[in-house]
Image (cartoon, rainbow, N blue to C red):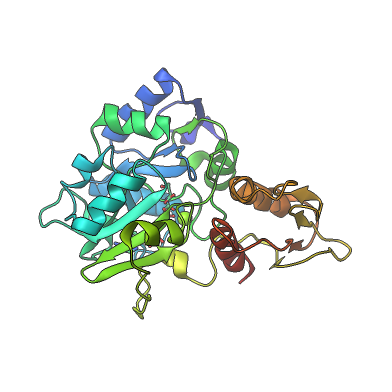
Length: 318
Ligand code: TXA
Ligand code: MG
């Protein structure tokens, strides 16, 4: 990494301590992008009200313009300055925030959000993250932060600072390192509609938990237009072929195991799905970096967060 390409003159990876958090706040207020850990994955954050700053996110990721961003807010009160909450939305926020749930809600007219954040939609995706570092940045800055996952568009999401550095290199002026992310999969995305709710992306908060809270099953997702590119068939893709439900590997392959299927790397020898979720992207990064030609993955049960793991694996294999 070339120090000269770093406009802030910081070392690209900074410890997420008090000084690191203050540096992140200063950079964000000046309209820069900063990579910040959350409990799901590392995000590439910028001031959501600053069109220039938001454009920097798109440029840094190489992200297509139709793909809107999640806005991170410190609490429910801040969220209500941006979106309209009905009874369902309020109950979801009360139960699952702070945490790995994103709500897609009607955007309030005149909300201070650059139009590139919502890519012109009449809705906005909001998330109140639980990670203490992201929370501290939100609270100290007083900003609402647009933040997609801190990887190049279409690549594997980052769950460690090294993944961000590897994917974005010197294009991130500042990267706060707080170790591995605890959940390890991107947030669950729920769209709250007038007549019910839709699951736009499975994640750490399960569909069953949402259904139990709201007392009604999800509405089918019917829109022909893709709203959440997490829905694109190929996403989160390593550069090598991925195969699912493989009990064994063939020759020159990097086998990702689970439970009793040992593999070259094991997501959870005890068969713990939460641990497998937390380790999945790190395992894909390692497999991709290995000298083997393909990545067979052991079967993962489809229960609970296993549904979100299999969703990401199917997209990695597509
Ligand atoms: O866990 C996460 O959600 C992470 C961390 C950093 O918070 N963020 C993340 O962002 O995964 P990203 O940009 O990689 O994924 C955001 C997803 C995209 O699929 C996008 O299309 C969808 O959210 N999205 C954003 N605004 C939307 C809207 N108004 N309607 C429907 N989908 C929306
Ligand atoms: Mg992403």
